[in-house]
Length: 115
Image (cartoon, rainbow, N blue to C red; front, side):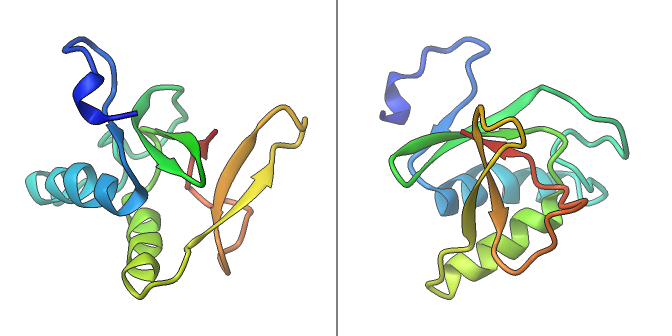
């Protein structure tokens, strides 16, 4: 799905891949708001608000706004080295999948990316 097919509404942007998502959505947000820890600028609390989407392994993944920027940076730095930073895991109820960063603890990951 191309980014140009997105209507100009409240629809969130869909990026071609994770690296594009990071450089075009996360880096500008962090540069404009250096104090942000999370994509939504809050310090705590969960949210179902979607920040953006990106394609990964032929699936569209949604990034929730309560995802921590430093976790995305870890994944981006691995991707920049030519490594695939993610592992796909099943949700506890087996009704979906989420992305985790390889080598990072699953508990309290602060990374909320779902298929």
